[in-house]
Image (cartoon, rainbow, N blue to C red; front, top):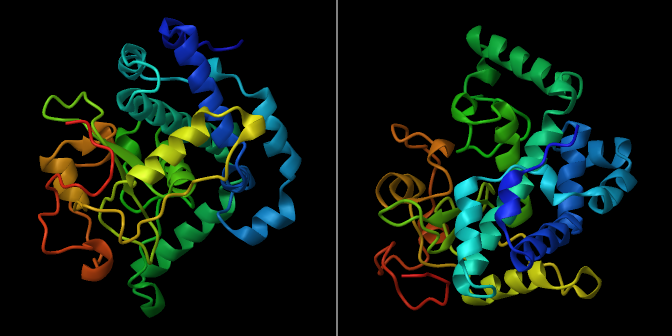
Length: 301
């Protein structure tokens, strides 16, 4: 039986059609094809993708996509409906819902058939590593294998996620598609969507949160809202460069400055110890890291 997201029925035609187009445009990209193929394949490795996945399944899935199959937060839908089409506030809420859709699609794909078979190889390897680590085998002492083969190092709390470990994979999916887990400045009331921030997991990328530049933001919005037959060059993933400033320490942003997507995504009592690089993570140390400045990124004050 088809599960209908009744919250979407609250949207008028302009809002729901724009959202539907935006999600379809993202799913049609090469990066989305590669990312979801790996989820279906069961291992985040290029070789496994090339050897054992039928790419036709991903490509044709866009045609079968139905926006009403997805679950959205009622509050997010209501906020989206309140915004005037094409305004910055509308575009921020649109991006929020598109990211949620990509995340959920990844989580659902991960959980198909319970994931028992396709995730068996990784879980057997992880169990073996943990056993060897417990035996104090030297080569395993520093190993801390993540809970899932698909995971962002700072979003691994399945015990507090709605879909459990499948949401861990969902955060990985959005991170690979957009350049990082996508967060928003929620303001002191923690229900706003004032600006967009990206939390990357690239080994050589910034460990701090960074915003898209104004140009990157506008280019992304244009890509989301254009008819599929006339799409411009794909603007994602958005990677951190010297132009993507200011920066926020992830823990401080989440704990003190209301920057997150959902409060359950991380834990307040844990500061991740990812080694930071002064040059990569804070591009302009002379400026207050969180202070609003005219760097050209979108922020609704």
